[in-house]
Length: 363
Image 1 (cartoon, rainbow, N blue to C red):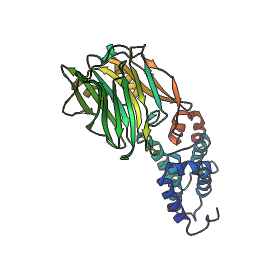
Image 2 (cartoon, helix red, strand yellow):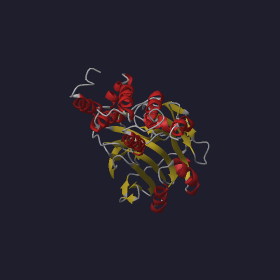
Image 3 (cartoon, helix red, strand yellow):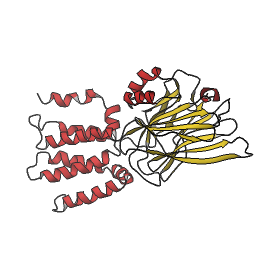
Image 4 (cartoon, helix red, strand yellow):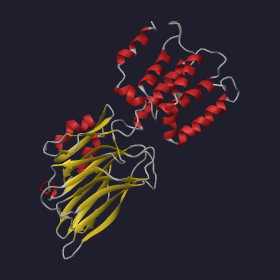
């Protein structure tokens, strides 16, 4: 507050912005210290002050956006909306267009950081019950939508794994921005099980949804594995035979993680299907990552199970929308580890009726 009338105020805003951009933890601390509320009070005070430059207002608004895109609260959203109210119910703020543009920028950010997703970091893990070797013995495809914010070469996380009654294991993992597979299988004529991993050609696109498909097809003495990213299909690879035993299978979504940044990769949906052809994968990709569209089209595919993420009251849910009802999760939900930001509060908790009185004042 002592710098409000200082000539270095804009430089101070620039310095604080660099701190906020450095780490989400700084944004969380700024929110706890009510810096976002302080900025809204400033903007409300300045909105018709002719002595305040547009650049200064823009700098303070940029600071606010950095915080609210990471973390926010109902009170902050409600107070920000009050900036749209006309002054003395007669005329709009001098910086009204800037406020509108900022609001659009905040809401547009939801495309870059989607809501209602499972963060790929511990302890965000779900165990699947009811899956059997009989479901997948003739070949299967694992398909999932994943949002990858940025490439951290040290970031490593398990996306999915399955283990049969003979303790044979197949796991899909992400390291940096590359998907790779890990196997622990019994090899014929070998006395011990063999463990090996295989790096794929799949390098995830940053800051956008990626559809990843891995198809496993038994073929005599070998197993053919096909990897696809979106609608691009890579060459097939032949590996040792992956003969999944009949009986119950322990499967897991998520799992261990290491070197997780403030913005882990996000899982939108994941499922197991009977072996999918390239044309079926292309069709699935055309449906898109929207859970409602997937729900309406899922019956077109030979689905074993398909889980779609959702978030409600700080809990993350994965709902199986496929027809095999005996396949379910061991626990219904887990606590969300990602704080609510402006978009999640505005879109999920804010009632439109609370905004309408503002527009009524413009008559």
